[in-house]
Image (cartoon, rainbow, N blue to C red):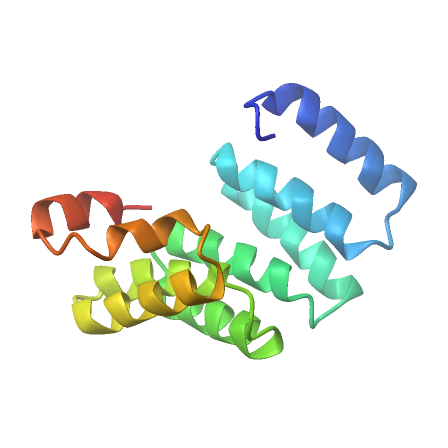
Length: 145
């Protein structure tokens, strides 16, 4: 997926799901691919399959939150991100996505706080790079999901 070869990735991920249907990470990875392809109903279905296998799968909860955020269900997204961050406090991704959700709600200070936390948890998290730029034109263009 990192190289943008989504069709080939989809085939491999579908094979993985078929071979290991009990593995929540297999479903979550394919859910991520569907999210990247904007196939949100398919993504939600795969994330739900992952949660059916492990309701505490924090990666899946973060992915499900991203789908909700893309669908405009910000409150549902925030709930998923918070659950994910409670289950795995050192996972930066839900904090990055929380920043987007809070920004979309007009809660800029909370958004900036989540960006700071994400960058402390994972200095390689690219959303942390947005923090120094408080110029709203640039800041707001980066916070569109």
